[in-house]
Image (cartoon, rainbow, N blue to C red; front, side):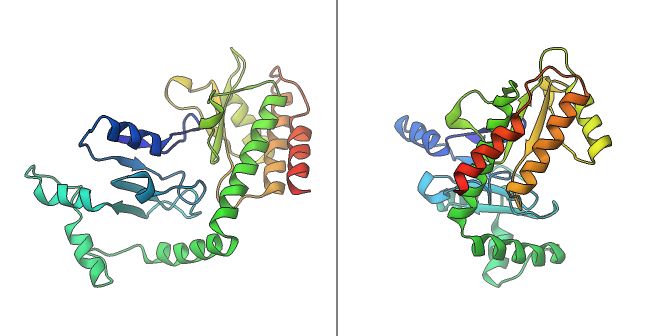
Amino acid sequence: VAIVHNETSTGVTSDIAGIRQAMNKADHPALLLVDAISSLGSTEYQQDEWGVDVTIGGSQKGLMLPPGLGFNAVSEKAQAAMRHANLPRSYWDWESVLAANQAGSFPYTPATNLLFGLEEALAMLFEEGLENVYLRHKRLAEATRTAVAAWNLENVCLNAHEYSNSLTSVFLPEGCDADGLRGLILDRFDMSLGTGLGKVKGKVFRIGHLGWFNELMLAGTLSGIEMGLELADIPFKKGGVGAALDFLVKQNS
């Protein structure tokens, strides 16, 4: 069973523990494989407690680095499945990596510069404290959704318990060009928003609020969006920035 913990095209976070519980209730023997690339370092994640067999992570989201590092966490059950599988394969085989790890090395030439960056990124996260990191992401995500609601725009994710703390995906009114809005904001304010993917291409823009990100950065981001909405003549209600700031003031008082 393969699932994405934090799905970045829609801004939806999946209930991994609930999925494992459903698998256990059905007495299903499958391995549970989770993509945690955009949640690692920004949203609480518990491999062992949630019964995950393989977690895949990356360096380019909550860990604040360029892409180039990949991480696997592998349960004993997954390692046993690997050793007993007879199907020829070029991946899902961790033997060479595990053996090299025992010696403190790699079975290939690593991206040494990114490893130094990772060391600093982890130091930043642990200095703040992981619980505080998760609370900060939750606070900034809630402030973003407050702005979206005040603008009278629609969040792509409709279920509140599935909201992402890493990013928010926003629908524009029918007939409005989300990529045109993104281009205008990039041109006028040098700020890049995420594009809609797949079926919502041109209908959705995405606001990232993860990594090294704070209240003032979010205020600037939301201000750029609100100015862009007005300049693009998109129907919306003003006051999203003010609503988000009011929320943040209450959270910090």
